[in-house]
Amino acid sequence: MNSYVVATIKEWNISQFEKRVGGYAGEWFLMNSRSELTIENLRKINPKYIFFPHWSWIVPDAILKEFNCVCFHMTDVPYGRGGSPLQNLIIRGHQKTKLTALKMANELDAGPVYLKNELCLTGSAAEIFLRSSSLTFDMIEHIVKREPNPVPQQGNVTEFPRRTPAQSLLTPELNLEGFYNTVRMLDADTYPKAYLNLGNLKLEFSGVSKIGSELEATVRVIKESE
Image (cartoon, rainbow, N blue to C red):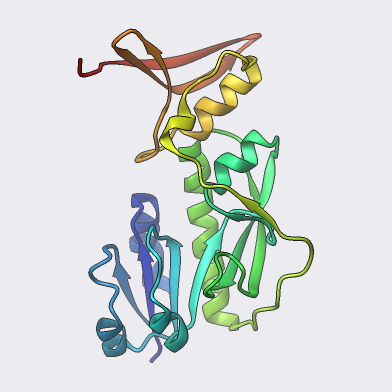
């Protein structure tokens, strides 16, 4: 019987793992902390694939060399390699993208591609991540069943810069659509919400929606340390 590992730190992926892998062939293991992902632990399991739906740390070269490591990137690579793909896509006006399953390599998001599937970018970041997570596990099931050979990327490389929390500040030049997109693209757990500063108060925005020609949003007011 083949064994498989899913390494992820996001609750939406952990939920999908618990709901889905019971129906897949093989023995499945979840790793959701950096300390678990060691070459010693992996050698005990000897997985056919290690899937990384959302992982925040560099995977050691020794693991990449010894195991088939598959990550999922929210762009049609080689376009959009790099950090913060969801936010970078939305601020560039994209309404849909491709979720790409690729073999991990030393260079970020540069490995050969197993498969790509369409992903809609409407709604809040939380809604998009839920949609992406469901699609990710569809793709995991496909890879396990079909064992496709990854194909080298083709085309011009475009790299996205990783966003910083300071870039969540809402700026005066934003129009209504820009405000809407900035709030929704940051509206997910663990992400720095769109915000404004008002004296010693920080106003965080979430739950934005369009009401005719206006917007409505939830505002959380936080008193900053003086």
